[in-house]
Structure formats: C-alpha cells, structure tokens
Image (cartoon, rainbow, N blue to C red; front, side):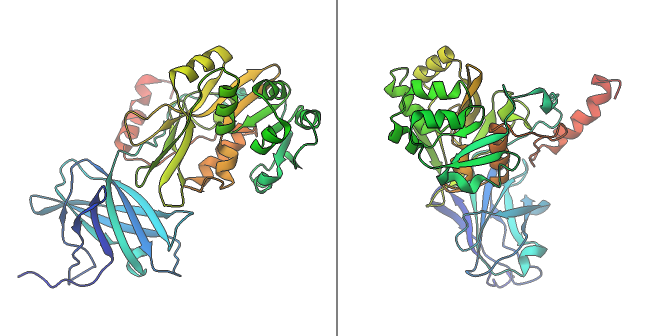
Length: 392
C-alpha cells in the first residue's frame, strides 16, 4: 500500500523552463520525497529558498540515488547563500552517479528545522571551476611588478574598495582637473581609470598608453573596446553572456603578477548575479580583429571566459600589456568587486584577483583550491608521486 503524502517544500526537477517532475513527500520516517527519474552522470543545480525574514548559517540537503528500484548510494550537498539572495536563496551543485536512474531528495540535519519553501533542481551543463593542486607552480615572489607598488589612485565612485586593497596607500580622486594632473597622480602608482574621466578629459587610446607607460594602469573592458575601436586599431566588441542557471567562469591563461595564487588552466567562478537572478559576465569578444591587434600591441590574455555553451569560450576577461616602464591592465574586476554589475557568486575569489591585479603581495605557500568531484584523480596523483618524484 502506498503511504500518504505529507507537506514539504515545493519545487521539483526541472529541464530548461519546464517542470519535469514535482516532489511528492512521504508520510513516514525522515522527511523525503518519492524517487524521481534523473539522468545518469549529469550535473544539476540545486536552488533552495527560505521563507521571508528567515536566515540560517548552514544548509544542506541529501540526495539518495536509486537503480532498478533499489537504493544505491547517497550524498550530501552543502548549499551556499548567494549575496543577492531575494527571500534567502541558496545554491549547490551535484553530479549524479553513472549508475543512477532515480534520485530522492531528503532534508539534512541543518535543513530539517528550517522554513524552506522551495527546493528546485535544474539539469545544467558541467560545472567548469576546477583547480590543479599538484601543479608545479613557482614561488609567487618570482612575479614582480616593474616597480614597487605602494600607492593606488581610486576614483571616488570606487572608494568602497579601500578595505579590500589594504596594503596600498589609497588616494581618492574626483575628476582630475587636467590630463597633467591625472598623469602626476598616477605616476609610479597603481591607478584605476574611471570611465567618466575618459569622457571629461577627452582621453584617446594614445593618451591612455602614455599614462600606462609610467604607472600600473587598470582600465575597464567597455572603455578599452571603445578606445581601441575609435583609434581604428581593431573592431573590439564588448559582449555579455547570461544564463538563468549556468554559471560563468574564468580560465587562467597566463602566469604573471595578476594571476598569482592560481596554476595555469585553473578555472574559477566568475559570475555576477544580475537583477533577474541570472549568472552574467561581460568580456571583449576574442574575434579575429581583436586577436590581431593583441598580437601586434603585445596584449597577453590573463583570464578567458568559460560559459555553459561550447561555442562561447575564450573571450577576454582580463589582459595585460607592458608599455614603457609600466603596465596596462584591462579588466572589470574593480567594478565587479564594488558590486557595479550585480552581486558576485564568488566574492572572495574576485577580491583576491583584484588584489593581485593591483600588485599586492601574496604568501608563497598560498594556492587556489576548489571543491570538485574528481577526488579519485587527486588520490591517484598523490599515489603516483613516489614513482614520478623519488625524493618525495
């Protein structure tokens, strides 16, 4: 006889914008759903919502997997609250086992007593963020800016970044009186160029290059694309990628001062959450025109974009170019960390990247680590170390 169903959080298993199967909660034992069919070896995004006015420090849900009508394993998924959560939204990711035909949702100890109103599971593309903890990276002190960076010039609109940039003497600058005043303030320092200054001072690409020749100059993506296009150097196109459930990531393409703490080919979460709850990132399209200009000018891509779509990879999120005794860095990081493009999915990672993009120091022992589902690969690599490196 089938047990009676009792009330639990709403939601269910979704594919795109369609609800495939809604939860049906059992009446006996711990609160859990009836098993629902799922895809094998697929990634799913879990979204949970708490009732208005409620909060909690930790939240987990349990997924039990079934095969041929029998339980075949389970896993606990920790959910993390998004900074832009409306009504308390929590996110987590899971990958179903290769043998699983059904999954069952249960509430973990931290969730059982919480006023959860909805838990929805979405089939999504494979999660890109991964780390390479055994990468043979050099000491971070090997990478040094062309001159010691002790000062940073911040536009008044980004004054809130001052605590993030602890270690640099910050000078808050309203609109400079002239190009000469801006050049004097930026000389020998890190400087974040406000797009408003470009318009008010009538700066061209050549003017920005002259500023960068004596400073560590950081310019946003949109301004860079506009200046390069107006100068006739390339048809630089700014693009924005958005998806409701697929996150955007950044791949480390170049080892230098701005990417310390990461190994080459590390992939890190790099999404902002827009006003509609979508994951978004903007980039300079890696078109043939941009690549030709970058090769000619000496721009090296630091971070390239990873999206949920196979044909939309490789766009430029950050790039660097040596000019004179200085550097020109192209990135949206200051504005991302300041929240100008929405709340960040991984704010601590972005804050670290911003500190590196402005030449702040980093301990040689620190390295990026991201939780991912290939623990067996890491254990295998550790087991192989004595054979590959006998002194160890």
